[in-house]
Length: 403
Image (cartoon, rainbow, N blue to C red):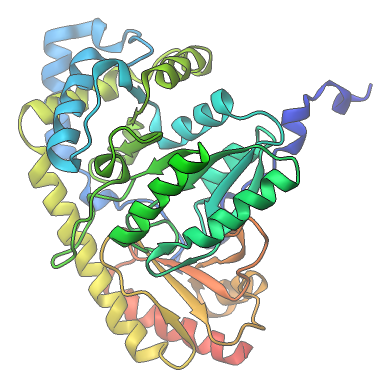
């Protein structure tokens, strides 16, 4: 029997994540890994979460482990709305807000609800593979848009929109991470944010604003307004998450946007997972109700800022003659572009792990057009302080020998 004949057209375009496939290679014992893009478990407030859990079990017993509603726990939605308005200056009504099982589910639901085969999606170069792959799985056509340290080049975006229309691909979504982007760590300027909104409105495009890292800004970094805060009436789906500021494994994020779209996303979620974890939602609600979140965010910021400072010191010592990078102002990532563009960091990874005991993520998986081979992403979230300088020294030596 030809089992492949049973596969849907959508499933046949799905590709395994190259970064996920690297997991076994980059997470070997004894390897100094700048590869892991996850937040550090050292920042997770396990004692406070245990306290909340014990109280919930005592008070709610078995009901704590019951199904929740698809849209999300009503009390948590109200708490999220209030905090997002206060902290991110993003306002949304109750019908414009929903909870999802992590930002990745949100991206998948957006692709499922909004994209038809051949629709054009525009993304930064580089961009988060989990986002662009979610859209590619629904047979969208991805267009990479040029970026610099100030963010997306809106003139290039306008040109790509024209190219999409000329090729018969309906321009539909712009996917962006304006704050401390994964993988580049870039922060968009205010001018680029305003220009993007103006173009999206003029071209009738929907912006997907992924704000996973926005609260992890470092001392001295100017906190710029979210796109949705700049223009609440613009066609924007705003997404954020508790994964980076509280605990990644709780898998709770939220989407805010036009009520007509949010209601369709809720319908899609019904058949995806029925509901986000009841336990996770109530743990987060308890954390918010006790007023612990702001101190938790401050702890996470200080932790990552200390790591970023050591990274900057190490790069200044070992990388100045081999590449350029954007000094981190927040988030978990640092992006290096090698001066020698003939170097392909993808095959270099296996050599680096085997011979030097240092792991990183090659640049190519972050580009929808297949470029970026001479780049690499370095994450500092899970590297011990005493290994940062040593790892960068070893990695710089490997890169020099590759030139």
